[in-house]
Image (tube, rainbow, N blue to C red):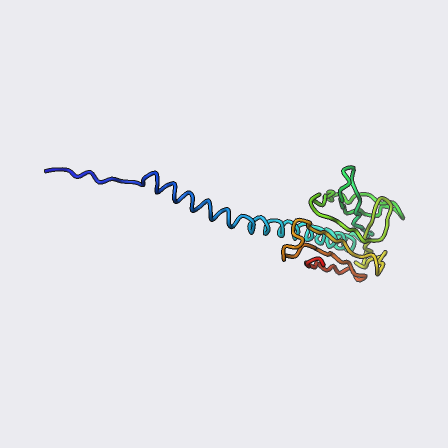
Length: 174
């Protein structure tokens, strides 16, 4: 009785063809994947700003002390923000559990908030209202230059209203 040798596995040519097809598919889909990653990063940055503002408002209400979110430029000329509590009239210090957060340098940032010592700030009263509200100074705009003109939202606008509510808006720049 003869045993028949049946070839098993794939030839080198077949493996190369499959790898080439996978490589082409990855190259075709990569710009879309990277674009979505940039969109998500921009949204996350805006959401972090929004949640920090909400946390400051909740801390002001729960502790019965004025709290503010202070936006300032660090030594690297990038925007940072931190929650502070008013210890005595006009004297501010970092909230014990608050850590300064930096807005990533890849984004263009426009802070249109009332001026405060050391930067710009939104101040919440113990009832959750904005003490230093100004109708023309109540937004933080974060823009991704790499998304501009790519038919995707490239701006996040976080707006604070007098009553303490906060609006998060994604939009395409003009």
